[in-house]
Length: 217
Ligand SMILES: [Zn+2]
Image (cartoon, rainbow, N blue to C red; front, top):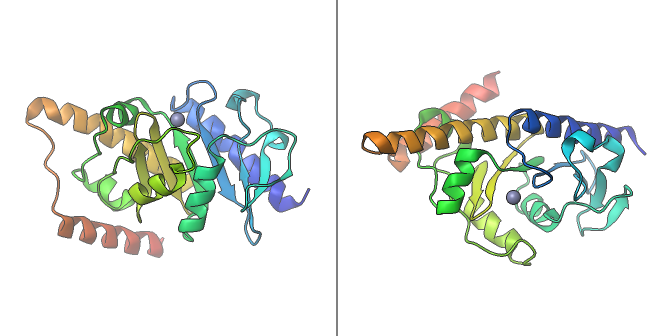
């Protein structure tokens, strides 16, 4: 096993413990993957194993056609969805699917997170769309999720939960935290008249501002 594979597997189990500590996971329902730099491979969580029982060796190494290259455990059932996103988005190296309470509430109601909170618009790229509903084992799940994700870093999966992406796992986790804070705030805002979404032009300017700020860091 190469060092790069070891690092990717450890990064995934570490990220699993982080989302567990954030209370974004129930049982074995979440999944995490990363691209392995310089190789046409990804590392992805195994199916049916809780994060507090998962060791790096259990993480599956998979090629872009979905073949298991290394690892004794079956990959997550969301594998095809992850591969579709990597094929569609060159800028993405990490994907996390979680079930944070407030994001999941909106996913169940099939309501987007509106582009109302500046911080969310800056980091996600605008409102967070809801994908169309398809059964998890449908071969349409990849295209449907990619269409709703578009060029953003987060999407709500109808009747399911949240999916966030990023240039690395740290970013995908931060985006999930921002989405959950935003979903919570939006639901509270409905008690006092409802959130006021910002116009698309302002969303684009906020996004550009954030990208410049991140580039300077
Ligand atoms: Zn789910």
